[in-house]
Image (cartoon, rainbow, N blue to C red; front, top):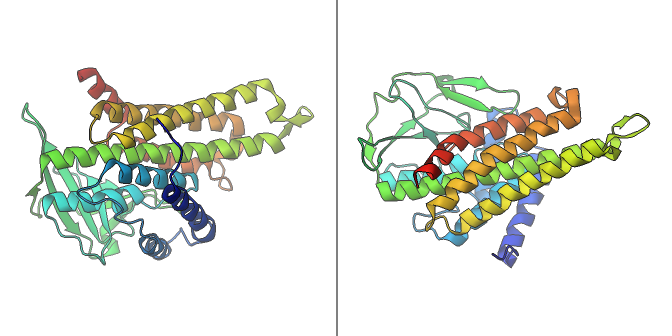
Length: 324
């Protein structure tokens, strides 16, 4: 497969990098108002709703490249769940999300448990999903739950990035109407979500590796930078190999997402396993500083843990491969 970027893809990545450096790195990410303002810039850049219901594999690859680059820049806005997947799910089920609203996808597990997801602090509407099998193909249902007041939210983790939050009303799901969704379209959308969450994992892991390489060059122990020690060099090389293996599998899956479910399962399973392993290794390279408030590595790790479980965990996708 030829992984050379086309001209429009190169321009997309340059724009994403410029936005990260100009807006995300200097923006207010510690308040819902600040994050909504940054989301407004995402919309203005045309990244929200990049994918349409009749999307092709080329646009999925473009979206994966964008998500990877934003992840590498540390962006914790719910680009995958809100900007790219939620509109497709809403369209597949006929649920209405206005152009002036921010819709967030949340996977609902269990009728008595309110949706928990990233991005609720900026969302106007939660697009919740559920499915049943009854020993046959999955049948999908979707509902739209409006968020009328920020007081309806409970922050599970904040730490200046609002990692995770949930609706406070346990009756939110029982009091709403569920709509039948197009099952074949939902399965395809879920594949796309798995590929894009793998792309986010690759970007986050690459950002962590870059920080480790920089740290290894300045942290002195035994009279020389720790990067000069072979044991550290081997660990960094193993991290790079794991990340690149996940990256190329993700690119291949993005290019064939509509035709090959197997490669999608492989890509998400590899990313959820190997990228998380690389990030865990980073803590060993950087030591105690990586857990401290002044370093961002623990933020990247928490974001990666969430991405690893969105649109199917590693175990879910390994199990799917075993059934093929």
